[in-house]
Image (cartoon, rainbow, N blue to C red):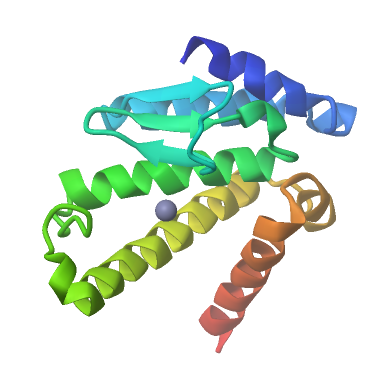
Length: 166
Ligand SMILES: [Zn+2]
């Protein structure tokens, strides 16, 4: 985790000065989360897989974090892979790569897809929680925490608060 701080620092400069200290809080939160969940996370400069993150038997590998454009993409990828680890290790979900026959491709594919949706939702929620917890103004959050991820995250936040009101 030693270079996690260095990787996060890169994004600090895109924060308005008065919000820069939030990056340290994000760092503590993620480091504690990873430690409490006993997950090994490794950052690699590049992976030949083409994925942003991969899971091996005993660790999560985040690929080319340096090429991620926003802190939102970076955090999303970390939490997405953490969730995959929890799915197999803690939630005992069946692993589509090892627990299915290729002949039963539909079941395998459905399981794979369910896990992707679950990891996607989890990662978005975690990023959304951080934005709320840190009281980052929505307009700034939209910009800093990436459009691809946070447009939907912000929509998610708004949607959930609306459903609570209803
Ligand atoms: Zn995934």
